[in-house]
Image (cartoon, rainbow, N blue to C red; front, top):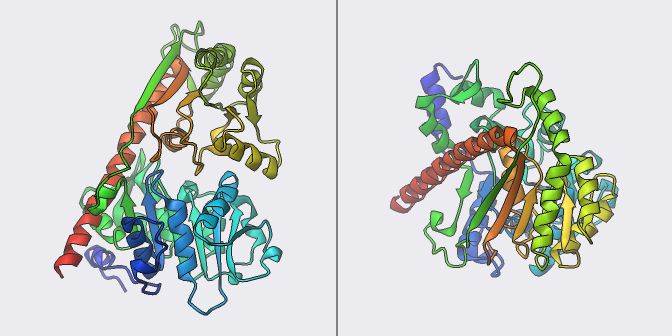
Length: 439
């Protein structure tokens, strides 16, 4: 029993237990880079691990190899990879490159033989967790909904699966508090205990205690690995230098005064924001269409948030394909892979459909016809194209009304905060590696 807060912190600072089995990096497929093989071997040994690797660093191939190696040799075991719907078929493709047979299924009744299975988050409840020896959450930042049904379902559903892996590029997309969700899924700490140890609650919500920052990152680095580029692990960054990102803002004037204001100084709350977005819908969509028309030889990715935006964009942009929520899962997957393969050159969709996990490095032009307050949505949307493997400067056009500039500023603040969290984790990981080498 913990007798004091100091004792509790001391226990949390201890190296987390390992639940996996030891494998040599040489056991990992040689297609992976040396540093990727090292990550996989560490994660297999750790057993319940988080790999927080930036976009384009090969999370898909690493999690596939983790799933393969987490099954004991000679044992007819099963591994399940849970991914966003749009990413499932891409995962199956990547598995084939490794010589792995990964099968997509929508129901546990389809699990009729040992191996690696892939499904989407919406189908999780149709799978009996006792069928699986290991489970991967691809784009595990879905756990950020700390009191939501999705988070609770995922944590409880897979609580008895022996080996668990959480993979994402954005472990704490909006607040460090969201790291508690990853810890709870992996069985490292309950959310309640982690909040009590490292956070304080005030009028602004949960925030990290100043003196608890270093102990928390030290503890987390024993079961979580953060990497932004190979040099974070002491390797050369050859092939992992991005060519550049050009953010181009387009602020449209709006002749609209929110209710209760003499002059238009801000959005005037949720209702005011919705009104501004509706009032400027045509101008924003026409602006995006003009950008596409001015650069017709390029593939274009257009992000929208409203159905009316998507419908108008589809009318204004010739040959554009609008992937929307009413489509079947197969229709969405076919279109999104069609864009990746170059069969579709102008894609209109929402971040909720396609912002996670897809590899579209062939495209270097995108436009947002509006923004939400979510830093993660913004980051992930841009990173579909601006990711390792991209060879050209990516242009991201942000089309907003002048009143919505405060949304962009809020997203930028969250980006700075998230970058600081990832940086702290990387630094602690590097210290852990140095301590291990000296031992």
